Length: 322
Image (cartoon, rainbow, N blue to C red):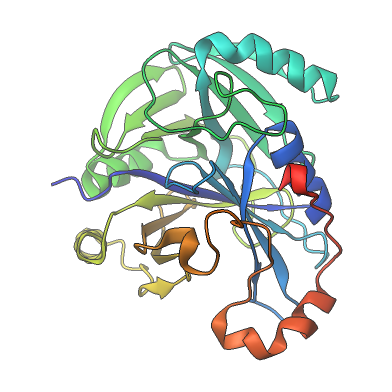
């Protein structure tokens, strides 16, 4: 039984909040669907969400701007290496021009039968815009100067750098029900999930001689990839399956406000999250018209709203780039 539907979201630790906001909205043309905070520490850090207009699962990128805390990460092996985003194949030329006009270096290449543009977030995290030739039912956000026909559809998946591809391949196939669909030298591609899901690709890149990267929160690194498990029942079944296979460091379910999550450290070191969205999704604390316009404080911290806002770094969003 497939317990994963497809991608839910991708989360990274970045530099300054303003730099991250400008990159995801101004350069990539995504919609800032939610502004809230990460409270794991003495000083709150922004938790920013970018997606399509509704914040649908598989379209979501989230970031923690860790420059404020002064915590740096180290990119390397046994870590998520690339965030892969889907665009129409015929739009790669548009994106090459757009990125170039904004001073973002991009390199076109081909991997696993797809044309791609490789680029980097200002903090150094690597991205690839993957040219998709098939239909994509996800409705893109048309805004910030990017027309709908060229807009990013959402996540394509992730590329994970590993020292042991066999162990990680077993986790994907036995744990997630994934299927090996392509191979090119040190790069293997697995498909997970069902036909109803999007962003279903896990690429495993064997880099035996690359020093190991960090796993903690730290600027310049991808923190985790989250997979959509649809509901609490599937989440529990998957947790039981992983623990039964010996991957016993699964967390208990955590309430993240907009979704519920279980975390598991995969054999590659990459952190996997298994999440299901609440029925209201991102509309639980804002209506559709104002979605993403106001900073949201978790209910348990409501009485500290002013204090929390005062501790966060300034962030200028503007109506046109939220």
